[in-house]
Length: 359
Ligand code: NAD
Ligand code: GLY
Image (cartoon, rainbow, N blue to C red):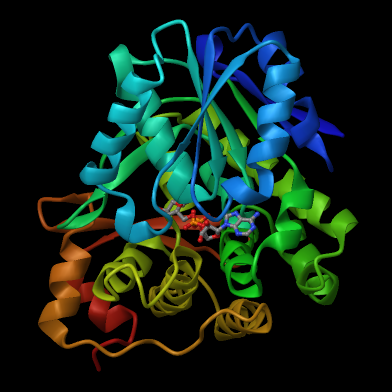
């Protein structure tokens, strides 16, 4: 078992990473002082798999449990789902002395976390992430929120969980496509923060793709360490934290153009990373050799290497919708070599040219 601390003064919390960790959820919630009704928010895919274990652990620790489901899918990460969730919290008697448990992938974590952030002006919540993407990225760092029809994650709050409990055994039921999508965020850390980790992923890609549990624990642990390190320095993304958006500016554009259906989030990030490497090479931040090495690893991990085709204006509009856009210029994260980052500022038009999307 590994326990990492995310040190954020009064918002500090632990990330517990352990095979079979679900059984200890109730005790760990008690240990961090949670009380009242545990509102377990999940979805129709994850609840039948892990809802009973989570409920049993919470009941054994003396909590009252309310099980709530939201629909499964990015297309439901919206205000309609959020309002339905508020209705369920009300019916279940979830008051300021209660807490939310987010059991699922990044969609459940983001929506349930945002509900917790806003319900009765904020009640505690616990992240129990069950996708690789959620275990290595979205459950850590306190970004919560929902999509707006005009753009992804446009509505949200920074709201840290009280505890993140990661049971890597839950990945056993994840389909290959979702597992590979999560690898995009793992590769991201290697590319912009840690060359040694990039090399570890390169060397162990076969074992990773076979989902070897010992290797999975290592990549989840290192990813969480790297993410926590960045969040501790810049909780509210005043500057440094933006490096974690590597591959996301253009990735989000493709994700929204696909109607949040054609591409899953991690695949869109992989496409965005393919393009970010090209921008980085065009700007002189990395060599052609490094470009090839990064794109080869992305492809080897089974992530998409074909860039979907959209017309110029659709692309420009989708890129401009990025919430990090300030006065038409976007902060664009590049890789400096491998294992380091550079920040640049560009208009959407410049990004089309630098990424090779427009000759
Ligand atoms: P997801 O939540 O849609 O989960 C993917 C699919 O896997 C879903 O169908 C889900 O029901 C299913 N699933 C989850 N766990 C499973 C399991 N153990 N076994 C079988 N099926 C399982 O997608 P995701 O990739 O986990 O998360 C993507 C979301 O995360 C996006 O909305 C993205 O914006 C958000 N995100 C947030 C942050 C953040 O910092 N808050 C960071 C990265 C991504
Ligand atoms: N996934 C980007 C961040 O948490 O800042």
